[in-house]
Structures are given as C-alpha cells and as structure tokens.
Amino acid sequence: MCGITGFLAQSPAQSFPTIIEAMTDRLHHRGPDDRGVWLDDNAGVALGHRRLSVIDLSSAAHQPMLSASGRYVIAFNGEIYNHLELRRQLASSHQGAAWRGHSDTETLLACFDAWGFEKTLQASNGMFALAVWDRQRSVLMLARDRIGEKPLYYGWQGDVFLFGSELKALQAHPRFDAEIDRGALSLFLRHNYIPGPHCIYRGIRKLIPGTWLEVSLMQREAAPVRYWDLAAVAEAGIREPFRGSDSEAILRLDTILLDAVKRQLLSDVPLGALLSGGIDSSSICALMQANSMQPIKSFTIGFNEAQYNEAVHARAIARHLGTDHTELQLDTHTALTLVQDLPGIWDEPFADSSQLPTLLVMQLASQVRYRGALWRWG
Image 1: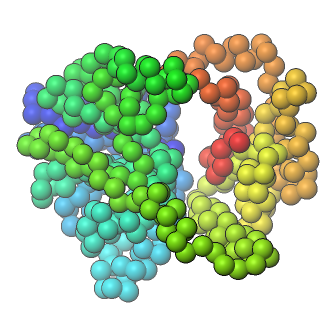
Image 2 (image 1 turned 60 degrees about the vertical axis):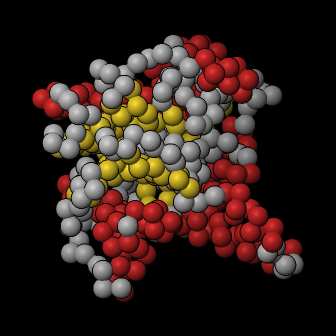
C-alpha cells in the first residue's frame, strides 16, 4: 500500500527531522517493510515514505528516491502497471538509464528526467499518489491517479504546506489546525461521506483524481491541473462508438479486461482478491486465475443473516475457479467490537455500511500472510 507525507516550511529548520519522522511514523500501518525521510533545510522541504514492498523487494527501491540526474526526489505510493514498457520506450529513444533496480519508482524518475512531469503522468498506467521535489526549480509537485484509487490530502496551515496519504500524518505537524469545516460536515450529512476536494478540516483538500499541482514557498497558490479527464474520454467514446456485433463486443471486452488484469499481476509477492460472488469480483478472480499457474488467494466475509449473506455465492465461484479460498463469518458481537476501532482507521466521517466487513476481510487476509488485493469488496 505504502504511504507518503511531507511539508514545505521556512523555519525552524532544526526541528525538520523530528517533525518529518513523526509524520512518517503515523503511516506505519501503510508500509511496515521500510521507512525513509529526505529533507533539505535550506530549501525548506521534507519528504517521508513508508513502504509496503511489492515490486523490487531490495534496498534499491528505498524511498524517498533521487533521480539519476539528481534533479528530482520522489515519495511514491502505488504501482505503475506499464513501467516496463516505459523503460523500453526510454531505451528505444536512447534515453535509457543505468538501472539500479527494477522498481517502478525508479522508472518514474527516469521518465521525469527524460520527458518532464506532466508527460510522464500522461504516459503512466497505474494507481498512484506521489510527491516530487524539483531541486532545480525549488517547487513541489503532487499528483494523483486518473480514478483516485490512492488518497492524497494537502493544504496550507499558516505558513506551512502539508501533504500526506492520510490526515493522521498531517496531524503530527505542530502547525496543523484541527478546525472543522462546517461546509464539509454538511456534505457528509447529505452524502454519508465527504466528497473531494472537500475535507473535514478547514484549509485541507483532497487532490482531485487525474490532476496534479505545483506549489512553492514563493508561490502559495496551488491550483490543480488536469492531465486526464473522464468526461472527455466518455465524450470521445460517444463520438466514436463501437460498431461491431454483440459477439465482437464480448470478445473485445474480454481482451481489454484480460490485458488490464494481467498488467496488475506484476508483483514480487503473492497477490489475491476479495471475492463477494458478484459479477465484478467474480470476473476479476476468473481473469486472475486464468493468468496464474497456481491457485490465487481469494477472501470473503459471510453473515449469519441469510438475506445479507453472499458467502455461499463466493464459495461456489471459488470452487468453480479453483482458488485458494478463505471465508469468515461476521456476527453481531464481532461487528460491535470492530466499531470502536473505526475512528482510528478512517480520517474523516464515513458512513458506508460495508466498512465493517471490509475491515474484517482485510484482517483475515493479513492473518494468512496475504500481501495485497487486486479487487476490493463489491
């Protein structure tokens, strides 16, 4: 999963190491495998990273990481599914690097050196939230993936700019002001969650999916810029609709889904999936199993109440696909026990009824030493 955090500030520089370490440690649960901080007192910047090792388990993938040119420093959360293709593109254009390892983080940095920040984002296929410090221009750049799979909060608190994967990290900074945004609270009461770019705390924002922003101590305005637009993609599809037969459409969809799942199976650790027995998770599990020589791990939560229990369907799908399936029943006592843990898990008010079974199935996966899920509960 990984977690990133950091800040921009002018003073007092002597407190920077203590602060960034405290912010980074707040994200230990996102990355128990490694921890790193990078700071430049003179520039007033500090970056922190907690790592969950998935691709390149060696120290060559340690973050924050510097680019080969020394210009860029990155703290990266996520995965770039086409990073090997990007390496081949760099090599074909004679812009390849002397690679230190095989992490997608290093690939991103090489692309920044060769193509710049926005072009690299446009070329990247993946899920990510990242922070990049440009040492040449003394600016901080933040970006989030196209659909918003990875979270990223940011904002000015007085004369300090904070960012992080979770609000817990921002709260560790002494300048953080936990004033409630009443407008965001109203949105929660209406929607049962707080939609982006709003945040429960005044002055803090969620970076909108498919955007990036640039900020510095000299230029405080940080307006997100779109590098990808879902509406534009949908409109392009309407202008140029698929014109084949039903059977051709089915074949095309199967090809697209198979390719998408195959890309996401690139990992140096075992992968698995949350299986509810519905169409979406069942399809993903089937495609994962089709790409695996070994039974994939699948997980599901059942309920004692028959009208809510989908475990029987998940069990049938797992048996049909031949997955290594694990199932756990959620009873009323367990659910009530979990409720007390929710404030420490969610950074903002969140009223989705699926949060309890989702939490339980993640704990179940952790108990069997499962590394990460390709597809969430649904």
